[in-house]
Amino acid sequence: MTQASTSMPEKDTLRPAVQLNWWRATVCSIGLLLAGLLSLPGGTATTKYVNDLFVFLDGAHRIAAGQLPNVDFHTSLGPLTFYIPALGYALSGSMGAAMPVGMSLLILFLSLVAAEVVGSRMHWAFGLPLATFLLLVVAAPANPGERIGELSFAMFYNRIGWASLGLLLVMYLRRLPGASSGKSADAACASFLVLVMLYTKVTYGVVGLAFLVFMLFDRRQIGWVTLAFGLVAASILVIELVWGGGVKYLLDISLAGKNSGGLPTMTALGHVVRTNLADLLAYLAVAIILFILTPSYRHLLFVGFSIATGILLIEQNFQFFGILTLGASAAVLSESLFRTELRCRYARARIALPLLSAFLLIPAAVTNAVSLAIHAYYTAGERGEAIRLPAFSEIRLVQMWSAGQYEYFRDYNRTLADASAALSQLNAGSERVAVLDFVNPFSAGLDRTPPAGDSVWYHWGRTLGPDYHPAAEEMFADVDLILDPKWPIEIWTGNGMRDIYAHYIARHYDLVRETADWRIYRKNASRTEADRLPRSEMTSDRPKPEFRLHRVSGG
Image (cartoon, rainbow, N blue to C red; front, top):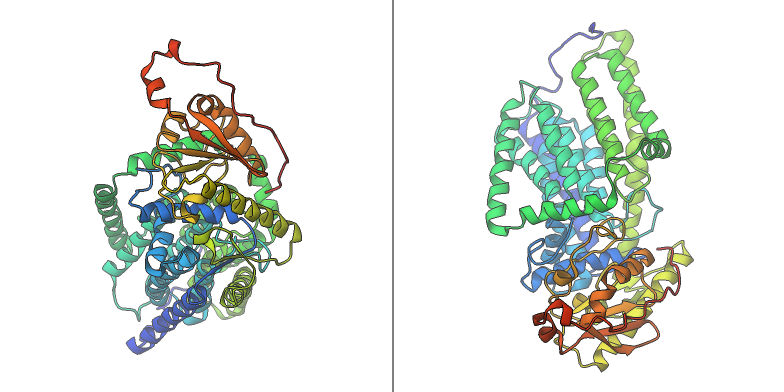
């Protein structure tokens, strides 16, 4: 390619250390402010996806009870998905504050990383908006791409992945000449971001590792990249020695992969492109301007990587809009162009890049900031309907725009109270409980001892299916009571679990209570003796539990 610009010494080569320190302190202050807004009210407000929230709280409760993810319970999500709320629960002593406090701690750590990575590589005019944008992605309790005020901690691991990957993309830029050399700091930041992604949701971690491989081809940065690979490898070995669940983590991911299907189809990818067409066009405009003014194969590969991985990531998320790494990548390209001394006739053309980058950053930043403020307002005033399980009383169900969603989850809340009352009447205080539905909220919500060997999350067509599912002998080995909901929060999961586990339940459990919303089965006293008998002598004519389809939900 021909060069359309003259290579010049980069600007701002003599930025004083005090200015860099101010820059970094500003980013950390923003992180502290966001963490305070999220955690200080001391509760959780949610408008939807309440069942997803219960998944994370169940995992936190299990960890508090001494269990280890993928060792004592199945999950295709990384262990950090549960250790984050578990740490919040340990510090706050409240299930209602577990997610906000845990996420606030992560925000503080990410703000330190952002201060170092962004502060050493970007001028404040580009870096400060980007750092604020990425920290807001993590702080806002809302699924990306949904309406303002649709509050939920559901899929919070995707927000962590987008923000971590966005910060990693900034490391495509070389350090500003005014910043002190920091090979060790760069390696520590990069390895931290990759490990967070690997142990939260593995797909983001794979993309992070691919980015580090790409960075190996930058001879001026190969030092910290090589060191980062070493730190990641060493950390994985240490984590495996302490945790011991790495192989089982991969097996659980494999099971989820078998149920959710293989590679994305062209139809699915085309739908993602159409849904995110405006953002993709704005990003392509940034890239084209950059290529015209400063042609570079390296820039071309970086743009291709950002687009391809963004599309692939959002396609496998429960998210329809918002490839959040495009904004980060556009800001990186803008910074790269502004470092170059252009000929006079091209100098004004680069003004378009900040405007296009703002188009990608500002709408999502405003949406997330408003959602965070709304969450603080509702939790500080204890507004909304409390979840009707004692340990979840500081979780508030609030109504925003969708009356249908609110009524749906209010009905679900009512069924939880019904089950709680039934369990109390059965004097089942020490008995371990499982639920034939998306999640079991009762171990954590009633502060009961959780079973071992089961899963925190069942989702038909994703974590289990008719052909690939955990064996009943493993799932129910430690379960004394099975709760079968007449109105499952996820109808396909409830019906599917009934079908595949009905025979086992019929042989080993008896119906002991039926309410308006639940059927409750207790492990029968003869199970141990029956397990010792030859299969031919087992009673196989016991009637199966009566499983009827009652209503289809839209959850």
